[in-house]
Image 1 (spheres, rainbow, N blue to C red):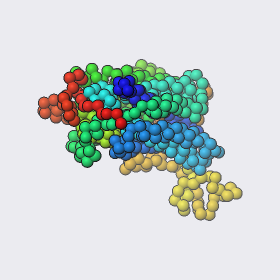
Image 2: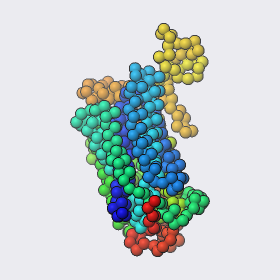
Image 3: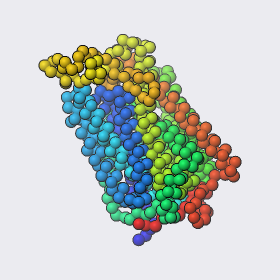
Image 4: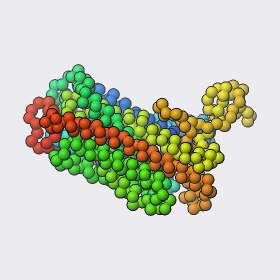
Length: 537
């Protein structure tokens, strides 16, 4: 068997798993979130829960699979991932028939389908991620950072494909034709089927750590290294700012550059896709930690700039387009190298951890994006949009606030379908229409704007109908909420930059950034990578 040809095929299959993941993520965030809000009546916070749960499941799966990936074998896990990807599509597409005629019961059923479908999708992505990172580090041991960056160009590659599909066929502003969201979302199955066929062909190698004779106990000991723990914290922030923001960026910017918000997403993804192929030459000149520090600063500047434009008078004047793309360029360059370079640093500095350390750091990033990033950014949008509308028109807020029927006696929100002959059951006591609040961590509960009511106003705009002053205030409040959410999110990469700067100072005091190798000589080629390839199973 030609090992080089086999490695190339395994790399391509790994690349395609990220294409599939990126497509699903982009199509969902490229307009389908808005469609779900309008169709099922979800608030921004509820939509954030759906996207967040998917990312959180992604993170948990990476960590758990990494614990036994070396023992079970990479191929078995990849087959499981293929089956989970397929099943996720079936469950997600069931949301509409389960919603039925609507109401709280139908809404809850649709929410369950979407959450379960996103969870299965996340499990599939997590299993893939637990395999492909240590796999690529194993088959290209002397150029880890370089090839991990190329591998993770598959993610923005999927984002580009998904973004193009969303731009052409998703939402009120579809450039070609508005297709049912079930059709467009199901297209991620195409790369899924291709990688599913490819993984059945070849044998997979053992991990680098196992090939070097590193036992499980030694791998676990690496997990308590102080620097590694610090890197875990920093990567949690990476997950929040990169994936959390990407979950929302199209939905936030759609009112700023109507019809071009998906193009903005495609543009930043294209920046990532191209630049990740050049990570190797870059780390030859600036070590990985320095690259991370510069990237975090650019990410903070770009996010704050985008948020400032969103809340400025330029939007009303119609002159925001050019500034938005300039700010997006800074943000896109800033986020490009963060995720894969963090994986490269862990692989280079802690090779004895094998799949466990690389899987854990990836899992932590996904958990942060899912539990904190998606919901947190959604909460901030609801908070600032609600506060703005209360300030400009309290009566309008009362009309569009998320509401539900609440039973004081049962102490819960109830469904109108529960009525018997038009009356509420005695067990419910007095039922009143009440604002339905959302919560996030320890922050105070807030009531967001009803997605279906806001969506109806946007439909009027799309159809060229004149909207009232109060309806314009609703749209303005949503725009303001999105901008403020981006501004506050910029604090996260700014914090990361401080952390990376501390690492730069630390390594300089220690004589410079050095790669830890399991055995053999340090590489003569790429300055900051090294290791040995594992044998084929």
